[in-house]
Length: 427
Image 1 (cartoon, rainbow, N blue to C red):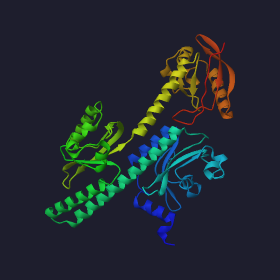
Image 2: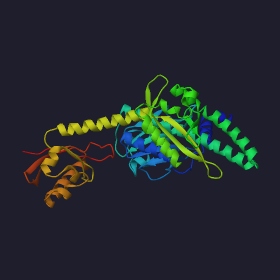
Image 3: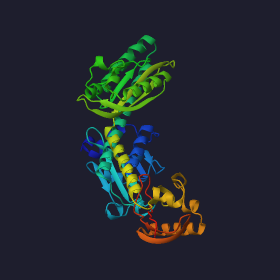
Image 4: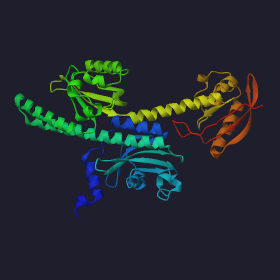
């Protein structure tokens, strides 16, 4: 059999073309991993690339390592799926119930991974999130993970394109001995860059030292519907939302004047007249003598990500409103007994403002140390048993001496997988 007819050989060849294995961390990938963890409310997120009997973490949150053994890899199973692998409880899944990372440290329970696929559908890795507790993802969170996995691939494609252009320029500079011939090679390289950029799915642009846009690729014109004479120069700003244009223009001009990297988020008008959120980022270019040449930048559609963030904010706002609407005392603690949320009834009962409660344990704000020890011991016991329980605890306050607390350890915050305690004052 021809080697390139073997799917695994083709997959490994596709991965090699990105030249990404064993490379240092990069901000673009770190940000996508961090956003995945935040949107999915998990302590762990990984941009994972599967090589030949090994896996490499291009970005990770919550692990602190760049590799783990291939034999215990969840992602090695995930790339066998069509698009997405969801494992609510690994101990109940025959594929993973004997996995060393499940039965031993760190006792992983939950996994969800969206495949990283090339344009021709070859899986080279995953963007995945993991947790130490069994759980589920909402459909919105699953879609957000899929969108972010596509953004990872776009970053890989852009990275490869820029590396290719850099190699071309380095070869040209090494070969050319005269300025005249070097300029001719640079002109040829620019033509190759334009041809390459016109065929990338990312919107790309180039400016001169004055910030005048001298080039926008085909993706820009297809997305915005602008003509070249409308977009070049500073005309691209007319495609931004009227409310965002002043801020985007000021950020660009200030960055260009300081010759520093530029990054901004704004709403960009599509050819059909609708607006979508986009992130615009660019790096300054410098010549052989250190002279500033302008920017080369890219624009990426992040509307789905913004929608997911807005949905998460609305959910948090609704939760806060519900807590305030519940009569009596409602509060939440993490697994170390620290207050992480509390309503007005709690502050009134304790007699202290909210800022003096958040992040502190009962020992730090209750007047009686023995009462505080008892309350925290009850919380720890109930959370260890993972079940709700009604308790009557005597706690001394200026206007109250007893309250009943219903402790529920099954809730989780958006930031960590920690147990929570909720309470109401007793009679």
